[in-house]
Length: 394
Ligand code: GLU
Image (cartoon, rainbow, N blue to C red; front, side):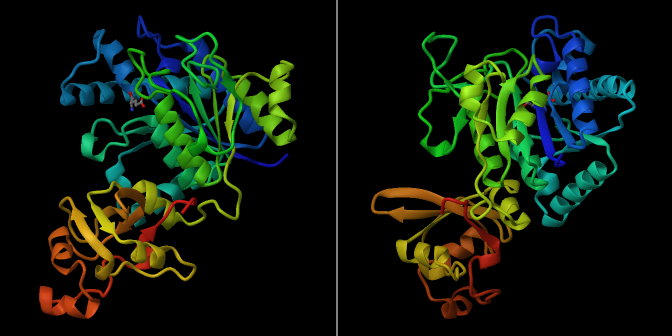
């Protein structure tokens, strides 16, 4: 059987009872048994686990999440060791080694560090160890936060080009409306094009006392992961054993819609990955699009957009820039936005060679005028083409 790389994202509500905040040991044991079975089939597994804050709340006897950031950070540092300690204890019964990886967005803002994180995860997988990843909440503040572990799990999947990402949640699958308020909501088994999806996700799965993400963050995560070739699955967190069944079914190539109807496989949603000719295959491109946080915007004209996206892509010249939004430094990442009549459409990201105030002075000018305007010219481009990245649909 082919060896697959599988990322499993566990939300807080899979690990902790929402009312008592006690660990859901039975469910955790099912997760551990499933993961070990997958390992024994030769697959490589990464777990992205939430739960640190909720475990911390239980340890200190708090029943609701405090508002102050420092208190939340302190709880995360208390809870993270309890959480990993418990997982380690369970995995140890099955002779399975685990490793803890705590990460903030700041840690991967530098491309070398991004590659280091990727290399370490790959080395652990090579050694047969299961990396358990969480956001380093103790250090994260809002501007450097991934924000939710759905996004973190998709970035982790992209980093290592995982085959599958399982987003375990408290509904079986994606519906076209909220199944809790609309009994006629229809399940969606296969999603080919996420941007064409017609669903009302408002608050599905987001209303728990302990969880962070909802269906909306899951769709964002699915788009990010499928862009890099990772088939993404939403399925019920209280039945982790289903993962085995779903993996085997995807591998078989059988028809999921028919087999869900026949009850041969559990209800779930499968977001198909992009085909290999269009998916993102470059670390740098994925990192520019999803690893970095944008600090501002460059509004460009149509001609410039055509030059950036033609076959032999050009770099971004100051002449095509109409407007600069926000304050940023040289080397920071900004969104590239194209002005289309009265519409502004974000088309990609770039890392700039000049600061926002410098670009404000040179925008609309030819590159050979940069030196006379600024007194120096580090580059003829505002962003070199290696520092420009567009998603697969562009
Ligand atoms: N990192 C947070 C925790 O461990 C959870 C974030 C999330 O639920 O998405 O508590």
